[in-house]
Every structure is written in C-alpha cells, then in structure tokens.
Length: 258
Length: 323
Image 1: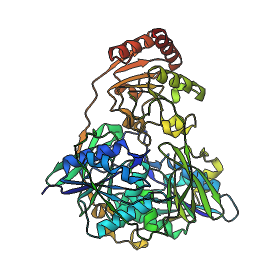
Image 2: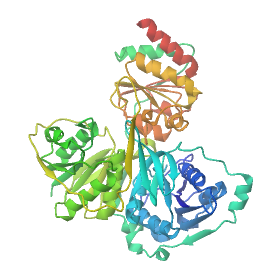
Image 3: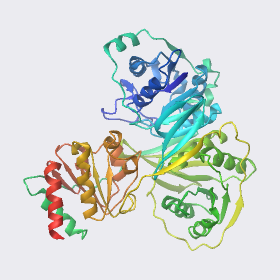
Image 4: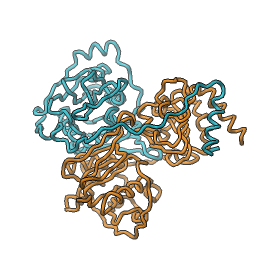
C-alpha cells in the first residue's frame, strides 16, 4: 500500500511569531521545523504501511527548498519525499496550496492520503478536504482511530457528541487528530538514513500549474489590516500561601456564583 | 451597493438548529438584505420555523442524506444552486466538523477561497471584511475577498449573539444533489454518544478545566467534582485530551469548543495559544498554576500561583463546607 502524508514545515511555534509588515503573511524566513501535528499522521502512515512492498511518501510545499522538517519525517521511517518549492508560491491561500499539493500527491499514486486536521500555524482546517475534492477522492476528517481493512479503511470520526464509525473505500483522504497514535522519536540510525533518502524537488511548472493560479496572484483574498486585540484588564495574581482556595471562594462569592 | 443576499449553512442537533446557526443567522440579518438558510437531514421541516424566526426568509433543503457524511452531497447541492444562477454574495458556515467539510468542498467546486476562524464581520463599501485572531488572539487580522465570490466565511461559535428577529413562516425549497458517486463513498456505520452529566460545556455558566499540571489522569476527578459543586461543566486542555485522559468532547480551545461562561476556572493549564483562543472570551477567569510565568495568568482576573494538588482539594472542601 502506498500512503502519502502531507507534512507542513513551519516556523518553530515556541519562537514568537510575526507577520511580514508588507504582505501581512506569516514570516517564514527563520528556521522551519515539521509541524508537531504532522507527527501523528506520519506515525499512523508508518503503522498502516508496515508490510512488504508498502511505502510512505511525504509531500510538502515550502519556500527555499526547505527540507529540514521533511528530514524529521524521513528519519521516523518514511521512504521518500516530494517537495514543491517555488518563489511563485509565496502568499498562496489554502485553495492555491491545495491545488499544488493535489498535483504533487497525484504523482505518488497513493492508496491513502493522511493529513493533520489542521496546521499549527495557519489552522484553516479546510485544505485536506480541498485536496480530496480536487483529486476526486472521498474524505473522512477528524479521525481518532484508523484501521485498514482490505480495500477500505474504518475510521472513528470525532463528533460533537462522541464519535461515528465511518468506512470509506480506498483511495481516500483521511485527516487525523493529535493523539490518534503515539508518535515515535527518530532513532540515531533513522536520522543518519534520512540524509540520503530521495527528495524529489518540483516547481509549479513541473506540476503543470499556471503560476497565475497560485501564490499571492492567485489568492482571492487579501489582508487589509492587522491590529492588537483588545487586552483584558490586568488581574490580581497572588502566590498561594495556604489561602489560595479561600481567595477563589471570595472571588466566586463576589460574582454570586456561590 | 449593499450586501444583498447571504446564505447560512444551518446545522441541527436533536431536531433543532444548533446555537451557532442562530448566531450566524442573527449576524447575516444585520449585514445582509436577504438571508436564506441551507439545511439537510431527515426532519428538516421542523427547523424552518426557528430559522425564520432568526431571519431566514427561505430555506433550501438538501433533505435526507442517509448514511453519507454531509461534506460531499451538501456542497454539491449548494454548487448546483449557485451554478443555476442563484448566487448569494456571501455564505456563512460554522467552524464545526461539517461546516469545514462542506466549505472546503464548495470552495473547490466554485474555485473561490474560504476564510476560516472568523470571529468578527464588518460591512463596508458593499463588502464584508472578516476578523481573525492570530497568535493566540493577541492580534486581529482583517481580511476580505477580492474575487467574484460568493465569499465563504467559516465562523467560530460564540462570535455573535443570537437574537430572534420576529420573522414569520419561510418557504422551503428542495435542493437536489447531483451525481457525486465517485466522492460520496464514505458511509457512517455506527454512531456513539459519550455520556456526560450536568450542563453542556459550551452552554454552562461555569466551566472548570484541567490540564497537564494535574499530573495524572486520576486527578481529573477533582476537576469533575469542582465543576459539579459549581453546577458547571468540566473541560480540558488539548494536552490531556491527546494524552487520552479525557474524551475529545471535553476539549476547550482552537480545535475544541469555544466557551464564554460567567466564570472559567483553569487548573494546571499553562495557557497555550491553542487553549486561549477557546476561552479568552469568558467573563471572569480564575487560574491556578505553579508557574508564575504561565501565559494563562495574562488573561486571568484572579491568578493563584500554587500547586493544584493543594489548592483544588482545599477549594472543594471549602465549597462543601459552605453547603
């Protein structure tokens, strides 16, 4: 079975984020890492595609030929990666990104496409379904458990009230939530092996996509303003000296909650 | 030019429109001249009255979709209506499971982008601008569509208040689903409801949430006990949901529920961006955390820098003593 996992390489969320003053898009010029949310998809894919002849391919779109995040996924055990990197992609919206990813994923001819439900930095949460629609595939979002069953997959899909059991024939797109599996840490051997694993570098024209359909030129939306949010008034922060509980009770009494 | 027509994707649960549906209708009524709802399901006839009361003058009903997931058939039916010449200026979706699936599919069918995580909408110059919190809500980005639309907005729950507008009966028009056999192959074969007692998390006046600082899963019982004493609901940070301590339905935050209770009590929660987005709109916030530098204290009205293992049991005892 061929499984493709989409991996997003993002600025380290632990570092303070910033928007570029001219375009108001996220500044991605610093070091990029694999989005933590993608650990779960990579792990899930490796577990589902663990048999003879099975293969996991990573697909990513990132500026400047960035591969540091992809290497993390390769070190975990993925066989190869496809990277789409092109200056024309700067400023792409989710739909433009979906067009690029759908074309790149198609090259790997997958039985199953696994993605995170949403990225940590952009969190639009619509891209996986857009990719599925572009590829003409069914999709199941918010999977908290996945099992491959011959030519179909069974998914436990989160709902407002609990979860639904959903089956879908392959090929299909499935998005996973954090916690679907416990991701492995790359081993030293894995990290060394990842350095020589193949990464196929593609441009927008390699994919047969017009540059006018992607990037800032193709984005049908623009940011018109960025402003600080209204701050909450400063609260009272006290160190507990045995009276913490009483202070909370007094606060709740004042609000007439108790 | 005013914003002429807005569609609202109306979701329902237990035979009634969901609260966020009513919030979106109220906002649509405020910024648009004509508001119409799109819905699906087996018993949609019973929804029409409420949808009308909140501002819809017409309802397009996709009808019973059987055991399919809504994303594919509902988006296809909407695209069919639009391609048939019935084009709204904007469509409002809730940032829910089905809302995102339908918006994503429709976006490709219409080749038009989607703006997600909307928490505010402002009308001006004949167009709508949307507001989006970024970096944990510390900054607000304003965006607008540049294309022909319709403008697709995916909106977070509790961004707007729901108020009935005194509308009357509405016309229900059937919306047909074109052939979507290739993509509409996911089937729901079982539905599981996780039992919870007490008020609903997103409707409770008091929410008590626990995070990684609780140390271990069994300590979550303290959160549940405190929530019960305050007649509230028990919530959780993503960290402990991911760790499997509590079901996902308890999660408050970006990928979980948005809550705006009178009092939010955060216990052992550091206050990651992901969490703050879901609870920062609470009227009053109490936080207990051992790390004085924890971001949760930047939004707390009362912050106790201390050990939850000491403060929580003492608080429970004190409340019990009060009766």
